[in-house]
Image (cartoon, rainbow, N blue to C red; front, side, top):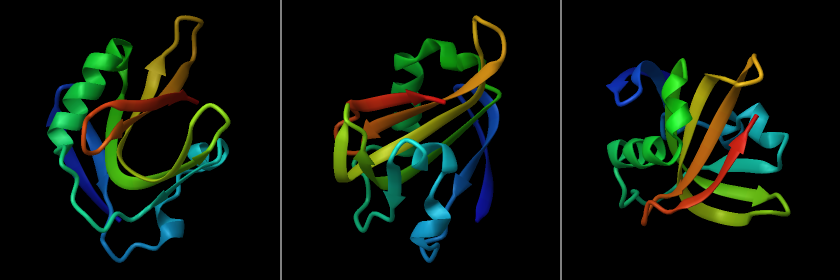
Length: 126
């Protein structure tokens, strides 16, 4: 796993760049697995750049501006959630971590954007 510094719309945070030889198991995020969402390596490049995906996500979720860190990853998304079933859908997965909740405490927000059109596929708060 390679860590890179990201200075952008949300301030400074760390984003994770996965080497191409990372196994599928290495790509999984426990919070997503708990909701029936898995990630796989895409073989093709995304039409949407990482910067474009971050900009779109920040515009759709303004309360994410208070996140302590932001990470993004391009992956094939598989979801067995009843609300959103996906199979090998190319997407940018953007995670806003430690967003202050109005009820106190913090939560994370995952936004899934279609990697070709920028359309929001769905969002998940954990």
